[in-house]
Length: 155
Figure 1 (cartoon, helix red, strand yellow):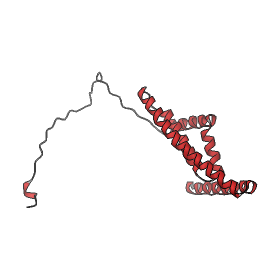
Figure 2 (tube, one colour):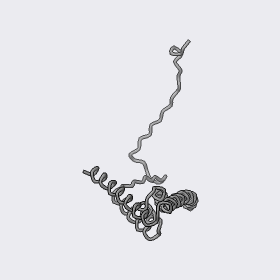
Figure 3 (cartoon, one colour):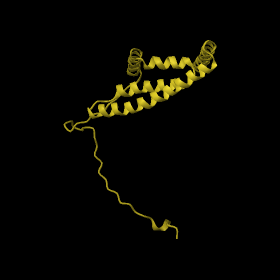
Figure 4 (cartoon, rainbow, N blue to C red):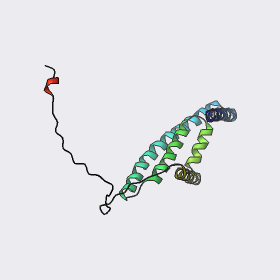
């Protein structure tokens, strides 16, 4: 059943995308529509390239401050998804990309994603300090010596 819902969602997305292209193409004309789609794709490439460089700088800065760069990674992930959506020909994907780029909607989407991850994903961290005794640990001390079997060599 979930596969059927997924396939229906893809079908309706493609149908809406083509309908929107035909509607805008009939109002603007074919040549302006093609130039508009090429321009939006170039903007998507530029966004991916620019945001990739910005992401590396933001992650480096947060790591140097001793912070975990989750906010920078999630924000950059949304920008990368928006850039890919801008590359896909069609205006519905461009509208979704703009929703991911605008700060108010991006913050709402990030908050929803963090809430979803907190409820669905279990994170476990292990910390150890020298002051904690290891009562359950077993020390296994061993030595090994590598031996070569000369009988198996090719002569």
